[in-house]
Length: 112
Length: 117
Image (tube, rainbow over all chains, first blue to last red; front, top):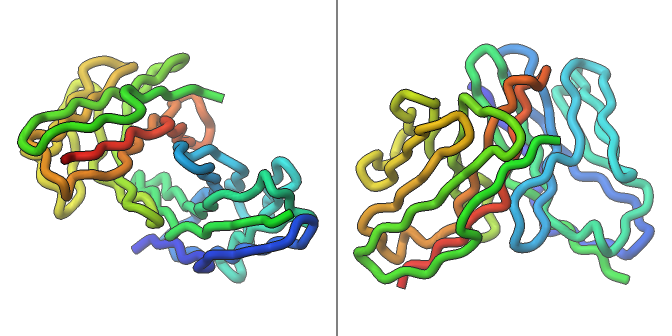
């Protein structure tokens, strides 16, 4: 079946540090891949997405590349800010069976 | 992007009472909406898929008689937690699929925090 596995947290970084949150997926086909961000007390917001192999999603300095060969979609940011503190969820959507799966979430705390 | 709202944003109720949560797509018509539940520091758990004009499809282990879902229009789905108990306290999040989107992207509401005393 379809599933998403992401790096467990929590992750604590200093401001301007480099961020990587790993995400891998299993799927029977070729899913679309997403990263969502959840700020304290709020719902999920789409951060970025990629719909096919080698696509790179990017937004607000975050990037993730759809790697079919490694079935991965790792989230990266070159220089994090305190305002990036949130929980990040990796997700996959399989169109043919209308199946969306979320990873467990990774809590990021950025300290000044 | 498309906007999804939820109401109320938080609710506190007594054990045994029923609570209704609304999910609205504000600028698009959503034939499909989803209800998720999120426990503290955990991921989202899909509870059910709500289809306009038909019965909801519940995930395994979710009690359909306890979590009543109604999708009466293309912009509104409601989740009613019947005879709520403290273990139903959670963060409930809805999402709606924008059929105009090429990738069937889901847009999420801000969530409703339910506390049952």
